[in-house]
Amino acid sequence: MSKISPCLWFARDAETAAAFYVSLLPDSRIDHVRRSPVDTPSGPAGDVLLVEFTLAGQPYLALNGGQPAEPSMSVSLLVRCDDQAEVDRLWAALVEGGRPLQCGWLVDRWGIHWQIVPRRMLELLADPVRAPRAMAAMMEMVKLDIATIEAA
Image 1: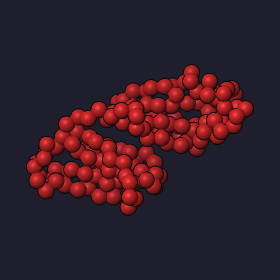
Image 2: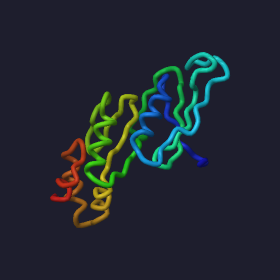
Image 3: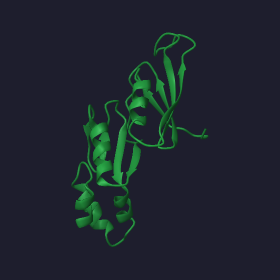
């Protein structure tokens, strides 16, 4: 296991959220579900406490903390998408029950912030000639559209 793994806090939905996330991306799986050996604020002994999962090859933890915690935009999960179909599929799945933001950002139903970004956008941002136009196009979008960004 990696020395550092992001830990996502959920009131009681850690297992449900982790199962949903791993259904979206290849090289993803639930690695282990740990149950609490004692009563905790998140539930009685035997309830799910911690879910270890791999998302696109990266290890994560999902913790049932028993009370809501407010995630912040200061930490987000960025997904580099290969094409518009992947952007569209992930966007639709993750925004359901959540809310869209701007510039490829959204908040899922559990309050986790995501950036759904085409790899091509990142390539264009590295090009000093095209970056200003690509960035200006992106600033007008909610979900990113590769063809519109390319045309800018």
